[in-house]
Length: 215
Ligand code: HEC
Ligand code: HEC
Image (cartoon, helix red, strand yellow):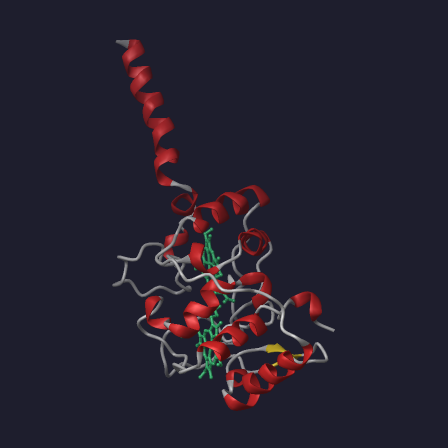
């Protein structure tokens, strides 16, 4: 009888952490959407149910251990929002937890975007797309990016793209520009009709934006 009780108890103790997973253990789901079917809750952080499509694993590990601000105006879903200036910093996890969390996040996928080339742009093409990013399409009015001198410029109503090349997967960026409705229903970013060539060049341009290029 005693052994049976011990077996049941140790079974319970062992099975709880294994089935829950570290995202659940750390209660990340209290602010983030971790499953596609969770649509009713008003989340206070960005969607993570497609984290495996969107992020580069090394960036995730680094961010979770060493959080940085990505949305300088705060996370907002409301189109008529007022920017916040007193954002609390993101909770930071130990290196070990960050690695385990990143691994679980990389398993969360909702799509299989078409692979794109991440070949670097020629200098001339880069300057042309940068012009379109700022003038033709006005992306810069909502997104911070880097100018050719390596200075941060741009609006803050969208997520910062200053480190897009380290943070985002190229295939996901192209898919976001082509079919944002795959990832979000209540979008605030305008939908652009881009020719396939332009879309490809925009993706490659965004992938050149890296924080090590800040001067
Ligand atoms: C109190 C609410 C809250 C909790 C709890 C929380 N987060 Fe966040 N998280 C946020 C907010 C708000 C942002 C947006 C920060 C920004 O953009 O600067 C964010 C951003 C992120 C990002 C970057 C997402 C992106 O699209 O840029 C990741 C990854 C992330 N959180 C993972 C986690 C993990 C893993 C946990 C659990 C250990 C967690 N968060 C717990 C609120 C929270
Ligand atoms: C009116 C403001 C606005 C403009 C203009 C705009 N965006 Fe956005 N963008 C956003 C917002 C807000 C988001 C966050 C998702 C959402 O709420 O729709 C976003 C998300 C993104 C993302 C995903 C980043 C992430 O971390 O989630 C990329 C990449 C992006 N935009 C690129 C562009 C490009 C390229 C252009 C120009 C062709 C552009 N954006 C123009 C507001 C804008």
